[in-house]
Amino acid sequence: MNHENQVKTFLIEEFLPDVQASELATDYDLLSNGVVDSLGLLKLIAWIETEFGVTVDDAALDPDNFRTIDAIGAFLARASVPAEAS
Image 1 (cartoon, one colour):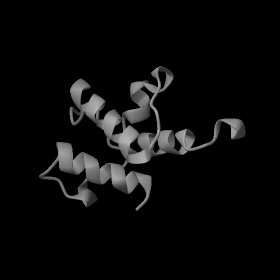
Image 2: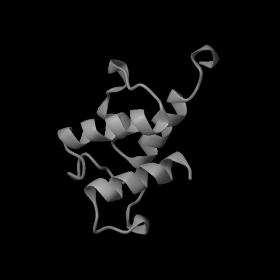
Image 3: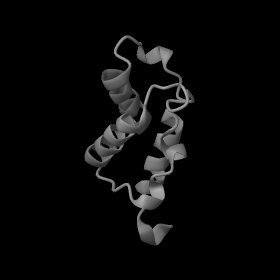
Image 4: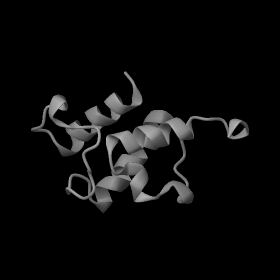
């Protein structure tokens, strides 16, 4: 399962239990549409850190990194790159 699918599954289980995976577009704005609020964002970030073994530091706390499933996938792709390869 790729990162985006894992994130989508988590979001549906935690925040959108009545929504089918096919109904949640990867570019749907989770923050502006009220799916994820500030407390939910903390829960999402904690899950990302645990699930993918990445650390979300202060610089990465930009809400745009977590606004959509696509944005989260891009963040995870960047976070997975070793520092010396950047």
